[in-house]
Length: 153
Image 1 (cartoon, helix red, strand yellow):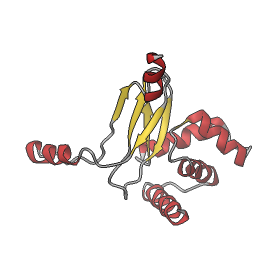
Image 2: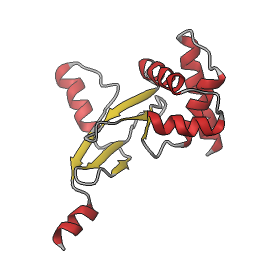
Image 3: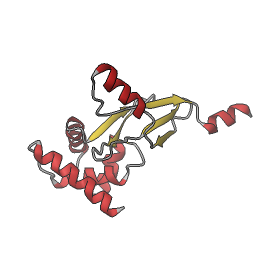
Image 4: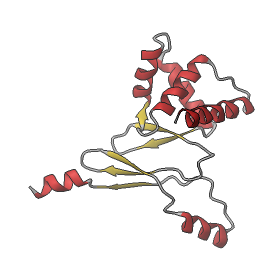
């Protein structure tokens, strides 16, 4: 896994450089935090707390500016859920299959699903509409198994 982490970090650093930005120590810590927590969608505040534990001198505004820059450069995806909080997900262009999410409307639990469920849809869109799909951003909202079971009780 460390090799993959290094490749992701290198890809992000390259994107920043091509856009005329440096991977400053503050950005490096923020990026590292996002990479370390790929399986979890973190809010800006959660990212800030993790970053602050590594470097107490980094402020919340710096983390927000870094996240905005990473979003602008399509390095992260901002995802807003029913709770009104925005969460961040690292976008890895070398990984053509991006995860999909299941979000419980009752408890807010989020589950990541990996797999290319929509390749036929993308092919159809490209063929029928001459439109090349670069990113598929899909979130399913419903009721998780735990909430379904508690409703039955």
